[in-house]
Length: 89
Image (cartoon, rainbow, N blue to C red):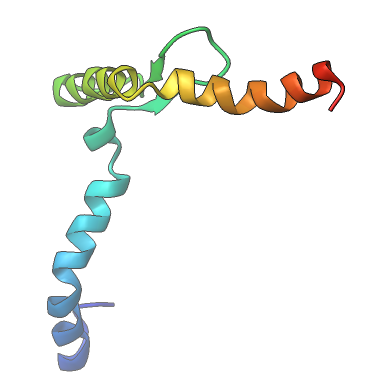
């Protein structure tokens, strides 16, 4: 659709930088996988047919999760309501 007609082509040219950034944000190769919740540690789930760049990005994502304390931050959010209930508040 973006290549039909002059108007659409001009619009597509204007959107191209934004669409590239959007693709990078949602591209599974860029992230390597998703964080698996419910385990006592950092675990990244990737696609079974992932190639080397995707695996490298999954390892980077795991490292970033560890360096940013993601597990501790998630645990602290879920412990707060439980701690209030246990103390009778």
